Image (cartoon, rainbow, N blue to C red):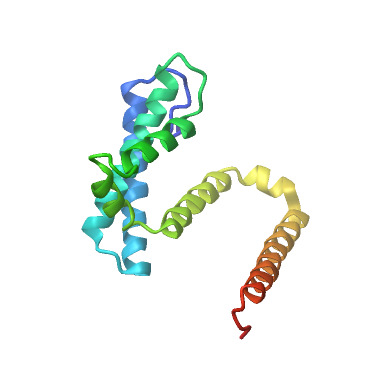
Length: 163
């Protein structure tokens, strides 16, 4: 089965359709999670995800079509900033709808996609062995603990009482 995203430098109809399909699926799942987890209206979240998806498509297209050697993330970031910049005619519209999409909803779906992508190669996963699972669990636990310690220090320094 070919990869869902065409990684070639050429922008083909097939590659663009794959990106549209991927972003559409990603958007629908994000909107559902956004509604269930944060109670944002589905219609507003869907419009917000459509805006983010169009910006993403434009950035990927610009990376592959423009003669400059600039990453798509730069194009995407600059477009997002320009569209949401105060005083721009698109600012209120973009900010209203994109603010209806919680970052955690997007990240959850993205990490699930990455996990599925990594899970496609069970042979490579088995080659890592049980040690890799233990190391992964320790890294996650240490990251969580470290984040909790930093949060506690910051809250204490800012005068928020500890629970």
